[in-house]
Amino acid sequence: MLQIIVKLIGVLLVLCGIILIYDARIITKKFFGFGDQNDGACGLKILGFIISIAGGLIVYFV
Image 1 (tube, rainbow, N blue to C red):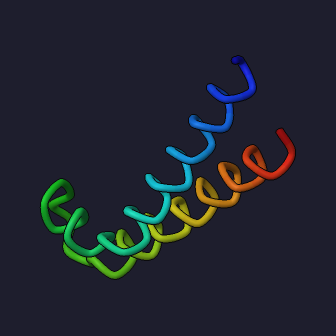
Image 2 (cartoon, rainbow, N blue to C red):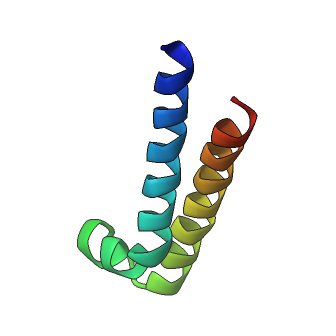
Image 3 (cartoon, one colour):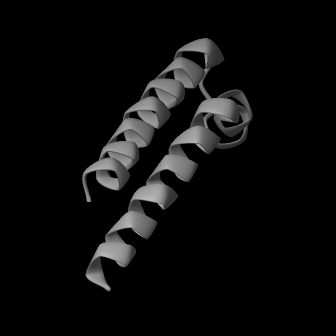
């Protein structure tokens, strides 16, 4: 039962990471108000990539 819960958490992490990657510019425009949106979008894409990799590793190894 615990294994299923941990895999579900990993899948949710992958999902959140992919959403951050694809909607980074929209999220940057909505929540952040600084001038250079390219840096903010790039940072969110990198964060989404790291979260996706972490979730994928959880799913793979559990």
